[in-house]
Each structure stands twice: as C-alpha cells, then as structure tokens.
Length: 525
Image 1: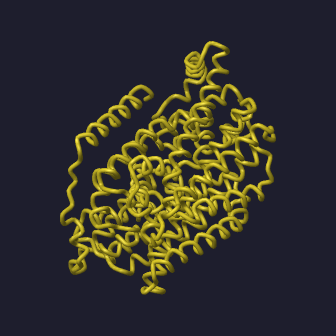
Image 2 (image 1 turned 45 degrees about the vertical axis):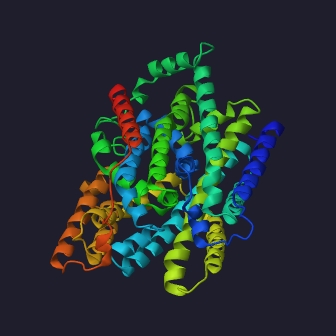
Image 3 (image 1 turned 90 degrees about the horizontal axis):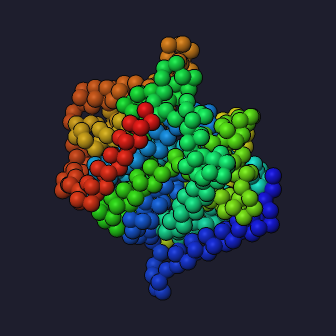
C-alpha cells in the first residue's frame, strides 16, 4: 500500500511543522550562554504539561503501538495491564522517588548511584545503560518504526530506517531536551487524536451504521474471551501474563525500574521547575496511561472481527490503518510517525546525556567547559544514531518478534536495577559491593532461568522469573552488605531534608486514578 497524494501532503506538513517548532523552542535569548544544564535538562524549567506529555511520548513508540495492538488481537484486553499498572507506578514514583532525586538535584541516574554508593557503580552502570540504550532500545525503535512505515506507506525499509533516525537526530540536535519536551505536547495530541480516530472508525464499522457504542457491544458479544484482564492458568497466553501474578508479581519490578530509575524516562522529571510541577506532570501522564488501551489495544481486538485471517498478530494495527479513507490515513500515519520520532529523539538525548556527564566529564575531561560538554553531547548523538541505523538490520532483521528482543535483554537486568535503587533509597546499610553483587546476580540468575536447560526453570513465566530473581538478588545484596563494615559516605545523607508530603491536589488525583483502576479491573475481571 502507498499513501495517496493528500496523505503524503499531511505527513510532509507534519514533519515540516514539528521540525520548525523544535527549532523555535530551542532558540536562546540574545547573549545567553549555552550550557549543559540547558541542553541536557532544559534548564530545569519544564512545566507540568511538558513533563507529562514527554513521559508518554518517550514511552509510546512503534513497538508499543504495533506490538500491543498485536497482543490485543492475540490475547485481548489483558495486555492493557502494561498501561494501567503503569499509571499506579507513576504515582509511586511521584510520591516516593522524585522528592529524593529533586532534593539532591540529580542529573543522571548513574550520578545518584555515585552519591549513594561510590564512583565504581556509577561508571559500571553508565557503560551498561549506554550499551543497552544503543544496541537494544535505539535499534529496536528504529527497526520496528521502519517496519511500520514500510507496511503502511510502502517505503523501502532501509530508506525508512535511515530517514527516521536522521530526522529524529536533527529534530533534537540544536535544543536537546528542551526541543524534545516542549514539542511533545503536539506529538501526544496527534497520537491520541489519531488513535481515537482509528478506534472510532473500526468500532463504527463493526456497528454497521448503528454507532460506536453499538460496535463495542457487538465486539464484546462476539469475542468475549478477549475481554478478561486476569488470564486463567489454562489460557494459552498465561505464560506471558500469569494471572494474578501480573497484579502482585514481576510487573511491579519492571514498572518501577522503567518509570522510576530509567534515565530515558526520568530525565523529564529531573528537568522540572519544582517538585510540585514534576508531580503534576506525573499525574497528567498517569491519566494518559489510563487512556492508552482505547487507542492502542482496542483496534487490535477489533481486528479479530474485521481482519480475522492475518498472517501474524502484529499486522493488526497496519491492517486497521489500511481501512481508513484518504486524508484520515495521512493523519493517523502522521500520529504513528510522531510516536516513532518522539521516542527516538528522547533515546538519543538520553544516550548523549549519560556519555557526556557520567563518562566524558567524570573520566576523560573533568575540566571541560560548558560549551565543550554540549559539543560532546551533540557528537555523541550523531555517533549513537549512526550506530543505531547501521546495527538495526544485523541485530533484528532475522527475528520474527523484535519486541521480544527488548524484553529478553531488558528483563535480565531489570530485577538488579530495582534492587540497587530501592536499597540505595530506603536502606542506609546497603554497600556498594552489595549493590554490585545484586546487579550481577540478576544477570546470572536470569540467564540460568532462560538458558539453563532445566525444564522447571525455563517453563516459569517471564514475570514470575523477574519476581524470583528480584528477591534472590535482594537477598544477596543484604547478605553482602551485612558482612561488610557499614558504609561511611556523604551519600548516606541523601534523605536529609526530604519530605514525602504531597499537595491535596496530588492526593485527590491519585485517589481518583486508583479508584478508576479498581473499577476497570473489577468490571473486566
């Protein structure tokens, strides 16, 4: 399929507009000096709406849209737990993690680890995150994005791969995080609008002229097995979403690591004007997460009736897009492209931030000027983008499900990262050696589960595996820390002056979000 002239015009108009907007918000006042805080943290002046929108724009990309719609087609509404439980996780991050990070004026997650534990763990984790971000996350976003562009627009995939990467690089090259965050509100509005259009039109088609609600009622009546949030042990997809284990198990570990300790995500909140502004942004993002299944998962479920003979589930979202008339297809395709560009630009900026501030400034040139740090960040962004474009096909081209590539490699380290940060934040007795042992144990134990060849272990659901590895790594961290002398570091004072008190508006919004979540799980149990 190829885009019509009007669809192509809409996509080009979007690209020109969003690029121009990024350059406009990146402009500096006359005489202003460009510094690293301005480039990597937007001058610590982001408003709540930019924080909330940027959190969602960084999170939602091609693998999220195409992959979750495909899971909606194959599994059903249960895949929405990834979105709805993220809303609850964001509240925990806003309540308990952000006060510590913002009070200590943290710039990067490795920097926090040095302040709490020591310099070794900062370097180790900085190198680890760079490798993960470049060779797993960035390549996956670009590869899956290029597949989506190829399927919908008929563009050569290698051309789409290079185009997406280079556009995202140019988009954030001048302004850094400011260019990304202050334009993400446009990206998110387009994403939500495009998603609602495709959901509305697919349900309207199922309703056969009787409206969207009639279409939803028909969908519910004809595929009731796709409307359960908690899968039973006999379900063929139980290993992916192990029933109640989703609500009380490994998903919490994955979510806390992703939303609370991941530079790629948390960098937006570190750039907030204030803690109160950061928390407002968190609440905004949490409400948007409640909406995501409607615009991502629902089209996949609708495809069960509208396109029942798909070759594979991940074709569900492109198949629904193919049903859109000219003009609307261009709008929805622009929304999909917006999600890809926003996530790619965010990832590039985070890679540049970690390399420049955690490795270059600390290990290579401690006396580097602010101008040099910004220049190094831009050079790093270029190098990372080129590597991502070149490495994407060799790493992912032969895989049937590239989304699983992300899950497998990220899941090996997620339990250890969660252990490191939770003990670093809330257990003063934890030592640097204990934290490093916990991180290493996470990788080793996960590998034993995955590749050990023991049937009893390899059959354990992915989320249950993360939970078991988390507690094992936590136990080792505690044991190693206790056999050592108590840590004597200024970092033990990271909690001094920290208050976890929240405003009434945050408490009220959090209560409303939790009530909505309880109702959703109660209705779709």
